[in-house]
Amino acid sequence: MNNLEELEIQLLLEGVFRHYGFDFRNYALASIKRRIWNAVRAENLRTISGLQERLLHDPVCLERFLLGLSVNVTSMFRDPTFYLAFRQKVVPLLRTYPFIRIWHAGCSTGEEVYSMAILLHEEGLYHRCRIYATDMNESVLRQAKAGIFSIHLMQEYTQLYLKAGGKYSFSEYYTAAYDNAIFRSTLKENLIFSQHNLATDSSFNEFNVILCRNVLIYFNNTLQDRVHKLLYESLGTFGILGLGQQETLSLTKYEDRYEELERREKLYRRIQ
Image (cartoon, rainbow, N blue to C red; front, side, top):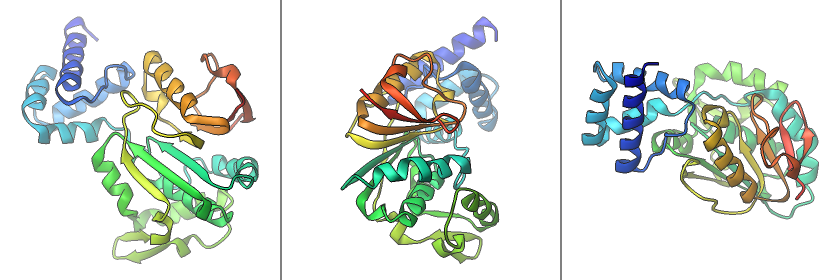
């Protein structure tokens, strides 16, 4: 990356932060550079400076930009071994709690939130749970709240559900309607979807479980440190933290404040 390109990226991100309050200044550079250039091409522009000018004067362009910048790679029961480990190692601990608060940070379009709701329902715990699912992007939150996904994905999701230890027929959880699978409204009863930005917002409750999977990998070290602090301060003592397979607490200042509950699946328990 040449100096001019780096300067243009910095100015664009600074402008978006100062004008709209969305802070991408500490995202991993290679990742955000790729997404910015995708936005430049999608807007039929030639330069990053051109994109900056349009973004600052057109809120609709900002909506498109935010959607493109969000990393919305997800699926139901993504990494099924994680959900299997959650059933085996975390659920027995949760059974001892009278009420369970769960924060799913960076929930994207909600597939993994509904997966957790199904798992907790099958384990007889869902009625005791409140799942707070947050994302910085309003557009993906609207999709998540709807609980409607492509029917063409259900065959793949059924396989992941079974690998995750699913106990029933996956088709029991949705109704097919044309090209859509509409998930049961009872799964939404204890879900609260809300906008929250990990880069700028603070803690909003104390949780027994926090899932923040495949989010930190897109942040630089400065922002990762901030988010680790936020997660730690939001988790009650003996609370459970779940990260993505490529993420870790190793070499963070919070490493000694957790014990590994399941190393391979990046499940940790706060001990101090």
